[in-house]
Length: 112
Length: 114
Image (cartoon, rainbow over all chains, first blue to last red; front, side, top):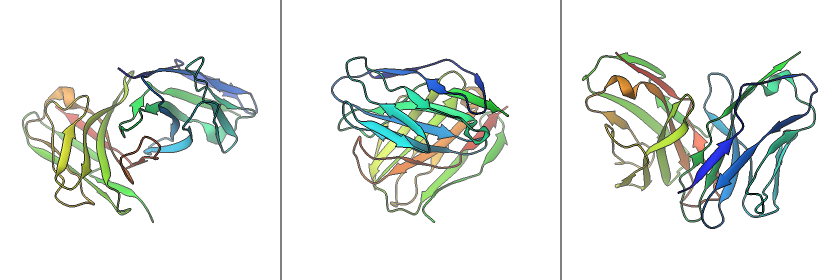
């Protein structure tokens, strides 16, 4: 079946540091890949997505590239801010299926 | 404002006392689903619905029921809650059945079953 493996957290960084959160997946066919973010006390919201190989999703300074050869979708940001503190979830949905399969989430804390 | 709403946001109950968590969306979305979020497990799908009167089991359906009588509403029913259903629950919706579509999530319902 489909699965998503994410980097274990928690991750603590200083403001303006470079961020990478690793995500790899197992799926049949060609899934769509997503990063969702959950701010404290809120529901999940879509951060970015990519629907085919070599696509790059980007939003709010975050980027992730769909790498089919390494089955990866790592999240990166060049300079993090305190406001980026949240839990980040990598997820996939298989072609023809709306269900999202999530990773376990990575809690990110940015200190000033 | 386009949104998914859930009620209640917090609920403490006792084993065996039936409860319903409501979910409503105002975006005319066809697809709705329920997830539960547990530490170390991420989010897992409980049930989903592709349209009115069409529902199906997700990965962890045991102990839950749902109904979809109207397009906008998708309540989650726990007929006899047990402590292992203590969790954070999210309702989500999207425009149609497609792997490309963004899902919109409600704010969550934190349920404690004593």
